[in-house]
Every structure is written in structure tokens, then in C-alpha cells.
Image (cartoon, rainbow, N blue to C red; front, side, top):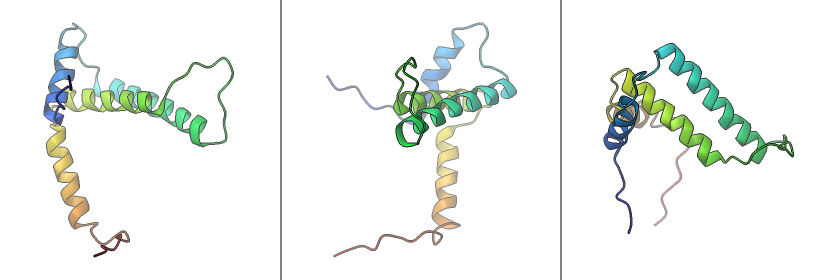
Length: 113
């Protein structure tokens, strides 16, 4: 049975329900920023292993870019929730900016008929 895809608000709510079960709750913004930096560093390490010149050590565990991106996404969700930010609204605003201010910034692929 195929699982229903969740929208961004449902994902934020699921993360909030998960975090809300713990007395500690969300970390402070400064701690959240440190966690995000840590996770982005782990993502960078995986990218470097897969696409760069730095191979993994033989005793290093196997992680994936997908797993590390998931960790970054989770921290972004936690950060947004802790600050009361609706990521759907933030996404809509940033896409409006890209579609207006930056609409002619990049070379578009020409449509073929």
C-alpha cells in the first residue's frame, strides 16, 4: 500500500508532535544553529566522499547523501518550528522572489516546438 505524501505543513506538525513528547522541547536558536552547522558539515563530508577527491577511511561507517540531507531537513524543520515559522509561507515568498527579481538572472532553456 502506497503511503500518502505529506505536505510541508503536515511534515512540520509531525516534527512538532515528535519534539513535544520530550520535556526538553526544542533547543535554543543558538544551539539549533550549531546543530545545523554540524549536520551541514556531515553532508559536506559525504558529498566529498562521493563526488570529491577524499575517499572514506576503511573503518568509516556507511552513510548516504540522502541520509545526511534528511538530517539537515529535520534540523531546518525543528528550527522553523521553534521560531514559529511556517515553511510553506517562507517557501512561497522565496519562490516569488526568484520568479520576479531573479527571473532574467539565468539563461533559460529554450522551449522547443
